[in-house]
Image (cartoon, rainbow, N blue to C red; front, top):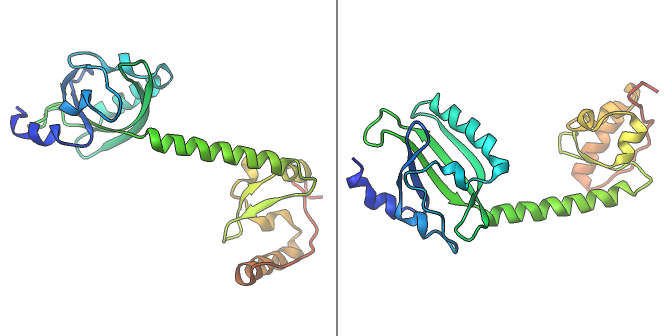
Length: 212
């Protein structure tokens, strides 16, 4: 039923699969076994869970059940690791749409693209952020970073210890909430001055979570 589409599918830069309602792979594009600089396992006629990383399988199953309950106007994007023929796992971004009972596909369409490079970059950024946070936490002074609207985006452990607020409470908090009411206007003015001139100095009394 897909004969007139196979040329397009086989020349797609993405790996394309079509699954039955029970999850069996009934179609895979030619690039499936030629993708990138590694070779994927041939899973035609099988359950693809055999090549999905064990730590990702629960989420993948939940996403598949969500797809079964959806229609062709909804696409779910997921990321999970797939085992190659050499036993190494590779990250893929997968876009899945339910075309069951919709010609000419009549199945679950999955298009997958390798994102190893993106994941490696994310891991580098996360490691750099963790290292920076460790340095910030060694400071004796309170340190926090504000967004342009005055909300707190980043802080060190001293902010938590001194104010008594939890990290969840601090995340996205208006910086003015850390100060006495009479001084809130001074803090707002200081933020505006910093945005305009690049820096400013203001003295204000910090108010802890319990109001002291």
